[in-house]
Amino acid sequence: MRGWGRLAGRLARRASVLVIGSVCASPAMASVTTQFIEGRFHVRHDGEMVINTTEAMGVGGIRPEITVVNHADGFDLELYYKNNDSEPQIMGQLEFWGFQVSGQLHMRHFRHECTEGPVVLTDGGPRFFSTHYPSDAYSPVMTLRDDERTIGVTVQYPVLEYETGSRLKMRATDLPMGGHKWAMLIEFQRMVKDDFSPGRAVNTLIPPGEERNVTVSFRMTHNHDDWFDLLRPYVSYFHETYGSATTYRPDHRAVRGFSGAQITDRSPSNPRAIGYGNRRPDVHGWRRWSDAYADVRRSGFQRTMTWAPSGLFIDDNFNYPFLFASPLMESKRARDTIGFLRGLGPRGVELGFWWGRSQLVMFGWDDPRAEIFDPENQDHVDRAFAELDAAS
Image (cartoon, rainbow, N blue to C red):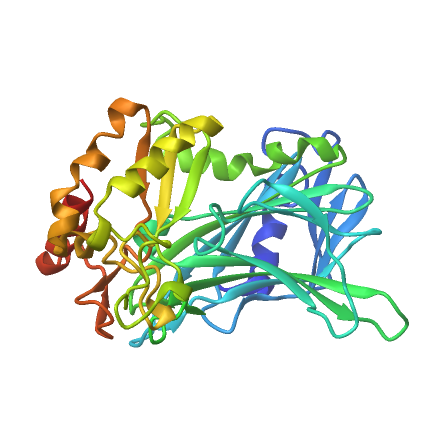
């Protein structure tokens, strides 16, 4: 059984459970309802149309079997993918055309401070707005707010097992009579690197004979301040799957940042551009850096972080280098004065070095060879521990 067409018949036979209302609530109590009418999937919130879309599941790949589970404040789409082919197949994306927007659309950005901003459409500007998990978002979630309601969308699946990311996207199409038609797309993609660039997204493939189960949850409210509650399906899934106990205690003290290298300092006698002026540890040792680190106490800091402590590659695609610490120990002057850094603890200063491309194993300075870190590769593990040991 695949797609919306055959699902409609299935739902018609189970309408009291899945189409209207919730298993736990009567239709009179429900504020969100889902229906199939003449081949279209309708979602209403307190009687107002929110989604009015045609069949559009599994576009561009395997079409999943779908079960709709209704809740009083929304619904879940339980997706079941099965590759019955002898070759890997694309895990089809979800598309919801006919997404109704009343007034100005706002989206919340979860990468940094969960700030909300308007979606601005300009002539010649982008017509879609998206976030990709886990490359640029910590969770596969999205919130949308217009003049009437806030909608939360979350995607639940075992990301470590499936080894795939997910992209949540809103796309606008200009209408001939003015205004816009909106669509929501959910794509399953993984990030790959090309020549060690930041990477690009490619469609996720399901191997022959394998299955995938994904739940997409929609929750809605008229109270815009309750946006976090709309993400509870993902929060609950995460805690049930990975546990809810925090294994560390957050440290909210500010960190004073330093740059260990500057491109402008590169010269024939300083090919790695290290030192930040007169602080080259291979020439002057660590005392000057130690004094600079200790001086942060004057400004109320207790913690420091230094970017590019070992320098910068000539090819910027490799910065910040995997070799963040071991090159510092190549100089006898630096090795002999390492005690200045180890003496920062008693002076009330914590020292941190930024391990830039920690997942891209490099084999030598300005060496173009590099490999994605493989924890099963003992050579990779040894090289990683060599950096950690040098930074200790």
